Image (cartoon, rainbow, N blue to C red; front, side):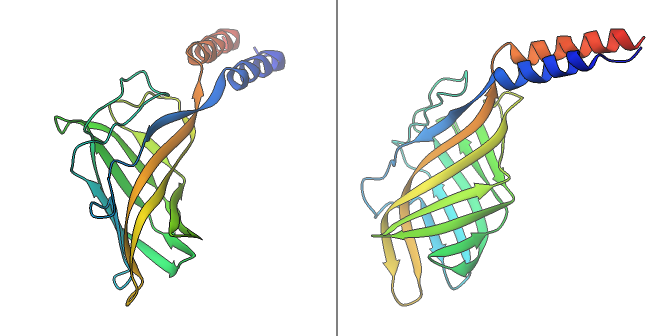
Length: 195
């Protein structure tokens, strides 16, 4: 038997109305000043790297069923930077977040990113084709994105390198709790009608 077009429209409509964009995880800048940077841009090598190994970083998780995490650390391997500020391009990379026992919370990977300078020492690192994964991340997220807003920028005027502290935010479109079940039931009904 053929699948009813109205059933397909109904399932698609339920999926569309049961999803919403939400903040996945976020943190305020944990550094007191520029002497403890989270990111370092080496203009000579064309690389941006980042990490936080200190205390005081609270990863708030309003879009996850996981609790907020205190004393989180993160690491980002160096990513290639091409072009120059105020708008530079960053290659693919990944950032891993760990709880206070060094267990992985989540990973954020991307295919490409941009590093933008807005003047007054403010810069932003934002990515495209973002993917969240890890123990705290449920399935079904779409339209993932993240951005770091830099602060306390310390420039090296001789070569254009800098260090910065940062705050972080991330978002995704999240299916409502029953959306995946409804989509699954729609698939079962469609499958039975085919027989």
